[in-house]
Image (cartoon, rainbow, N blue to C red; front, side):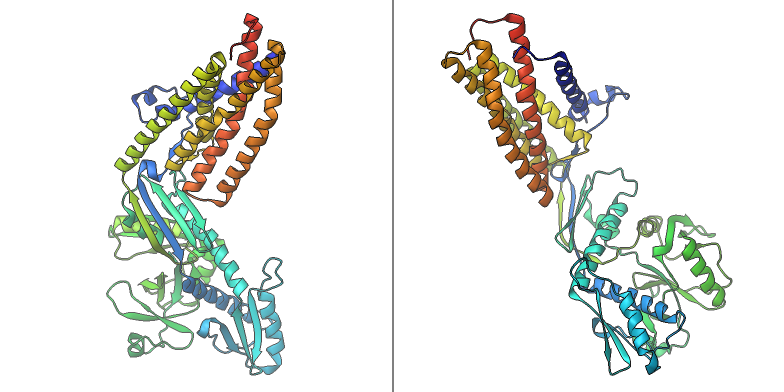
Length: 530
């Protein structure tokens, strides 16, 4: 027991000192003392969750029909591009009726070649042996591509991953806000934004798909048919955002928002808000070629299947830069620019649940959580002090150090503290002294057996450590499973519990052992009252 080397003493002391230092910014945050904290010292802070800081909670669900429609449109463009390549295969109009793609091959001798090309466009789904599209020949010359169930599920999963990242970039383009954006199940996204109590602006920013497309206006369409929603083959009727009415545009996309590199709010020559956009190299090339080939013709700027404007192409636009004008305010132009710059949503998201937590309610939760933590800590400390005397004092010091270490680790990992997290913290306080109870009771037992003081202490620590490790490993496994599979409050509780269990083992086994070893080495007691 006396052989507690100096390097261990230094190591334990450094860890404890670092824990105290790293936890202070979180403890003094929001108080006048925070301003006097030196800038050269660590500035890690624990973030407060929605239930403590107040804010908005949204649960979004993907529109499965919109996802299928988007997938069909993308495959339609892919099929048309593939069949235009040499050797070109002449086909009729591509139909998307009934949730599947179909087209007629004009030359029957090219059917086999067309089928082979279509099968190359389909992709295998992981290791299932299935493919994302089923290719069949109907009536000898008509080829039908049907989305498979496994392909649709995989596409939705991929789309939700992209949508989650897009939502995060829209809410927090600078990456400085402490927000929660996580997928739940296969088709939902949970969004929590502390400090924002107006969910309407948040819903408007998130809900916009921002699917930007440039398409040629179909000049051959009959205006009367267009107003009744009918368009020639290969075209579609879309509503005008300004002034009402409808316009027929080609289905084929000249260039899309996927090829944007930047978008920013600016002003036109008349001082009206507009949006400057810039395409990447491939987009600039496609946009330049399309404007070169269609000088004098109108093209439509389409946002989420609504036509913002349909200006004429007066001259080729070769620089890759363009402006989007319309009836924008400065704020709406800014929001649209953020949406375009963050990328389009691959699937439409509908709000199925919204909740707002006021800051006053959050402060009340913090106040009650602090009181509960203090009551639990004081109660445990009194019990340990009365029951174990000096060894209870060491256990209480370890308990305080454990609290500092939990806060320090959470601050370092930029963790978010929620109300369930406070519950996990309080539970950890009680669990933290379990190890000390095991050690102290084992020392008592060894003393009753007649062992010498030093041998009793040494045996007590050594034998109790087995039970301590076994018990806490099961705690860590349970907490890790909850943290991995859970989300929101469950994950917040599990993270704090896991950190607390690990730190409590360190303080109970190593820190208190160091204190006891230093005391015995310094005083050489003849008897031990525990």
